[in-house]
Image (cartoon, rainbow, N blue to C red; front, top):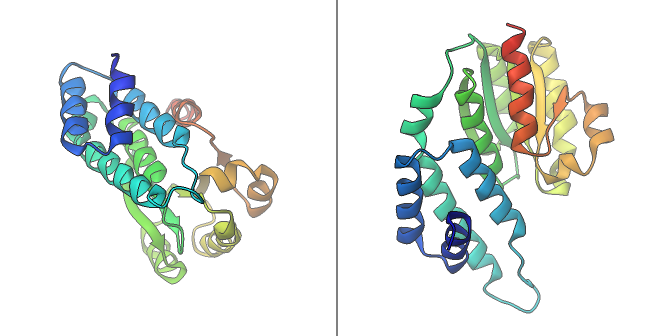
Length: 212
């Protein structure tokens, strides 16, 4: 069984120890962290469960997410080793209030770091008022906001409007299923760059580095 198939099998079965062991082994053998994250993303996106007929769907999904989260944390020493020289740019990645799906934002934060951008991952369900207080002080070069749940798209324009009052030069990057499926809305809100996958983010960040 190849690495991807073994990773997928263990994740879908909810086997935490086995998953973490093969991830650490792959990292020690030199697997590229971004390639690993692309596998995680593909596995999570391919997860298929009939939520109406299978009462354990949500339980299994949350278990799988927690295992992926643990595996992601194991990559940090390898991220530090592989990242390019600092660009002097800063970024904050987060999900707005009521948005609980944070794994995509968590992985993208590491991709920013690998590309020499000083990045903080704030997490899920960030309240609007807390966000505004932070941008008043921090003045980030970039903000990366991830929204998966369509009901939470309403916060995209609100957060960007608030940001522009205090830090108009900050570039807005967006991701997540809700944003990707509504590109015109994200553009209307003022998003500077929308990425649908990690390859697009990597290419964007290469261009950013090249312009420095």
